[in-house]
Image 1 (spheres, rainbow, N blue to C red):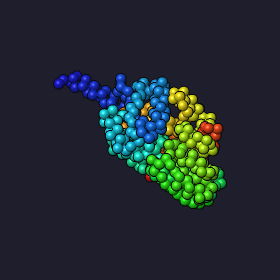
Image 2: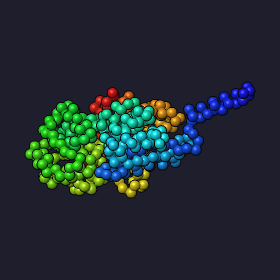
Image 3: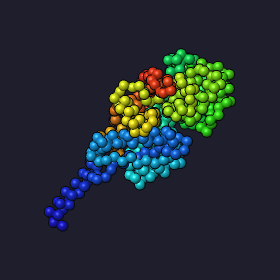
Image 4: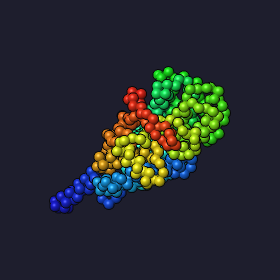
Amino acid sequence: MDRRSFTTLGAATALALFVADSAWAAGETVKIGFNAPLTGFAAADGNSAKIGAELAVDQANAAGGIDGREIELVVYDDQAKPDQAVPIANKLIGRDGVKIGISGSYSGATRAAATVYQNAGIPYISAYAVHPDITRAGDYVFRTSFVGEVQGRAGAKLIGETLGKKRVSLITLQNDFGKSLAAGFKAAAGDFGIEVVSEYQYSIKDRQFGPVVAKVKSDDPEAIYASGYFFTAGPLVKQLRGAGVGVPVIGQEGYDSEKFIEIAGDAAEGIIITTSLDRDSDSPEARGFIAAFEKRAGFKTDMVAASAHTAVKVAVAALRAAGTEDPKAIRDAVARTKLAASTGEISFNALGEVRKAVQVQVVRGGAWHRHSVIDDPALLAPPAE
């Protein structure tokens, strides 16, 4: 080989390495993975999350995509089941070649998938699943909504300080979501002078709550802190009110759906929840998201839609900031992200947990509206390790 041939080969190799290491390969889409429950008991949440994520992708593509390349959302149905989420994560990473993944699913499925992404060294963002162990999978895993304990502590402040109620009955859903919320509530209850009168537990399959309702009524509490999703909380609240239990019922983001109001009917009126989305916000991000989502979906927005939209915004911002397909560079860009979204001002601590205020919503006139905001950095501080 002569010197000229060697020089030409060296230049070509250097150019190839430059393209591989510092730019996006021309002509290909940038793939973002997305798992959500599109069938099964959580399908309504999964559908909302999917529409929110698709909206964010379309908005990002209209703004130029990633260095001119189109973003592609690769979606799979995990049915909110861990045994479905694991093979989906492997497929998204190994076959589809996603550069970052997003969970639009519940805690069990998200925890399972997080381990797969961490082991593969691909960044993964939980849009709204609350279990604390999700981000503890490792430094490639992030969360754009509150860890369960944070919402539980916010619930204690809301009941004990804002509402001034001290004798409280807990009704706890027996899964990752319910347990973490109850743990946070009980940990902070004493700080706000709350006495937990009793705690009753139920299964995600339950829709008839007669025995629990009878016991709560006999407790005669001043307020009830009840965890659940719209499909369990709707029947529970309806049965509580039907039995004459009229004290404030405080829920969380699992209630945050128009489906809850449909199921509970008139009993939904006055129910208060801690969540991530303020329907009455005057921020451009929230107003713009709500209008765009409802035009696209044909129904009112909810927390899961806003949270999925937020998670995709974070992913897109990180992909743009990284300027490369290198997973570590993308991971580092996620960790540095600071942006305004429909669910608040987003930034992350060292564990990948979000830091932001808790929105409190109340059903008034058959729709969710602003009740108050809890913005106490010390109380709401997420775990750091």
